[in-house]
Image (cartoon, rainbow, N blue to C red; front, side):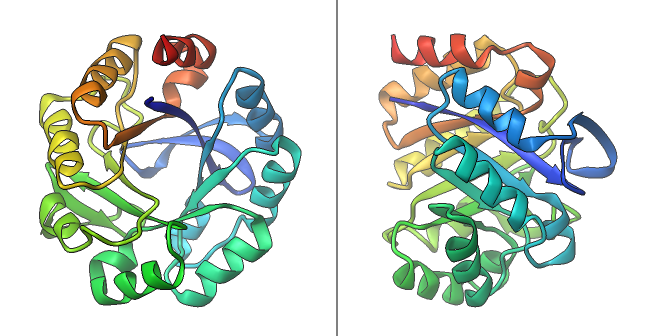
Length: 247
């Protein structure tokens, strides 16, 4: 079954959402990320997607204390990305916060051999963060767009003990415009490679949830969908979306 993952993006200790990854175009939804996490748990979420935006910009984990408090309060498994670019930061993030999945993006693009080695050392605990614009990989907290395609990078990691590949189209992210067909096609391609795919970016309405559910029925490696701004602005109800996915 496709799993819905509410997103909590952390910036300066608060719960925010950015538009297209732009740090200057932010909306603060809560000064208390722990309270927000408890809300999503109470509405039926079984896993949370956490992003350390300060960490993504700084190139090192920053909001570990907030993440630890979220996990302690909710008791939910959580995945965390943002600024995790060394073995030490992988290990300290797991040990100090309690997350069961660490998301690595920029470092995996720049040093794919290193990422493969980390997957072997931390089997099924690492997720590959594929952030893209026009199917080209973006790095450094979405501040730079590379010349490497999503499928080209993903192909390097087929067969590794990955927890997930989280694919975000940053052109859609936070824009409340839905998921475009090219991105839906990319989800199918990645899933057909045998990679466990979590869809992200542009999950705005129940129509998007329905489209992903339909894809997952024929591409079972599409295992999850992350939604952020939509659940904060009320265009998707976490409770209703989870019930729909279970039906």
